[in-house]
Length: 359
Image 1 (cartoon, one colour):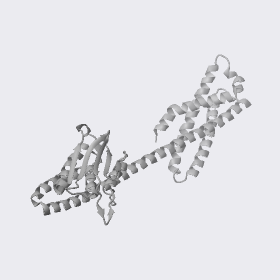
Image 2 (spheres, helix red, strand yellow):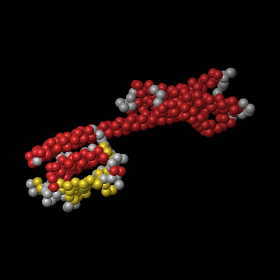
Image 3 (spheres, rainbow, N blue to C red):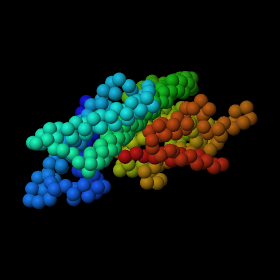
Image 4 (cartoon, one colour):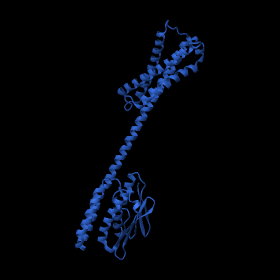
């Protein structure tokens, strides 16, 4: 099968090798040309032209024969299964083929002569030199073709590895996204239970907003990225649910310019950060939880809240959820997308996350 490399070699490589072969023989032993009467006089140019044509034709025969032998060996002896044996057989076969071809070419030129040309010792020396350089040319073709083959295999393997890496990353992204559904539903059903118990008249309102949020979650979870505008709409709906539940114990503000709304980030990122803040802090009407969503640096969105860690059996909960949902989930999704990672800052009184916004 003609590969782009084979086509290039036929059009460019073979003629160059033919000329190189002729010039090498000429400069190695210029005396053989000087002593031959055919290379002097008014008709000398015809002899040089015949030599060049013969060199080009010989190079063409060598390259085509080499390609044919290599194709047959590809069918009979694979590089993958028998690399050493394949290299040895290819080396010997191409060398023998080059010697035979050059002898046949010499005999053909002799046969075309009328009367038959009688070779001198000088001619035979030139022929032996031509055979040596022809064999080297065959070996060069062998090296070039073998290098091209292994480069092609390396490139194919690299592309395949990259494809598998992307598929693996996509599978991991899908697995991470799939964690969000049960987590989100579980938390909000608990919230709904509290609303029904405490303010049943607001239950219908809460269910309506919950359905709007859940619809947005279902629509976005299959997407690797969503716009900031979509995330903010979902965050506003979710904040409504939280404010209904916690009343004066919960406050949230959003301060993001409209010019940023076309930027992108992984879906449900803000919702996860809001959940994280609520889950790991204790707050009341006298000590409310304040959450601020704002643009503070170029290409970054900051979500911050005051820290009032919730104690669990006398030990404060960490800001990273051990189950992997929350900040760890967000960090993994940015990592698998090959993007900058979120920056987490924590002090005694404040916790903030800076999210990279993507173009």
